[in-house]
Amino acid sequence: MTILVDADACPVKDEIYRVAERHGAHVRVVSNSPFRVPVSERVKRVTVGDGFDAADDWIAQHSDPRSVVITADILLAERCLKAGAQVLAHNGRPFDAASIGSAIATRAIMADLRSGMDGPLGAAGGGPPPFGKADRSRFLQALDRVLVALNR
Image 1: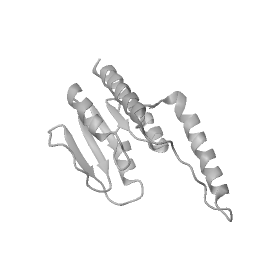
Image 2: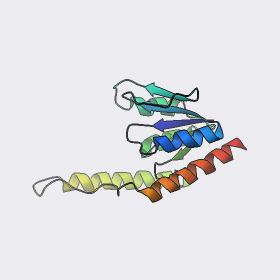
Image 3: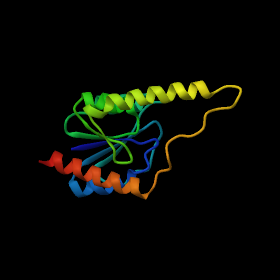
């Protein structure tokens, strides 16, 4: 089992390392710039080039039915689901075949709304709610559940 982490904006890297260790899973921390990772034979840092979507491309190419992808990127989640991977958002929300279509549609609608709000009245504000303890707890439970299922 391998956990592939879209690391640039991932707030749960430390949690991933702990859960992976407990389950004997390998972790690949993928980013455009180097990140500190624990000294472990199971945890490896993968630094890709600065090309557009280079980290996403690496993760999608290495996704398979024995991998879990951690990302908030909906389009990357879709690519990894097509490769057979399990996909979790940082808040523990799973992406699956039933939910990815509506997530992509919502993303498109929000992009349209944001672009329509830029103009003489100012830029659109907002964004996702702050990441909290409940999100962290939900993520830990979801990752544990997915890894237990993959071990069967």
